[in-house]
Image (cartoon, rainbow, N blue to C red):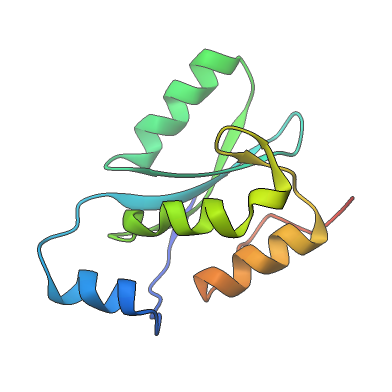
Length: 117
């Protein structure tokens, strides 16, 4: 499943500061484990390569759902926001409320994550 680059704008002071400050090289990504339905929120300079690494380590098909270029600095905030949905590490249970909170926090609609559970 290919990922689509999204152009988004956020009113958060964190995002604005990153836009004005030094070059940001990490990208924020959202991945979906096709086997168990868990979603992963992480940061990487090369999300496609990271997806391949995770597939190799888990032996499961992982879809790269969304990449937000230069917004890797938002990872910790999202992990904190979604802590009640945390499964293990950077993996979160894909519930309707988790997907809704993620979409609201990112200011975009994450595709391929229909709410369920």
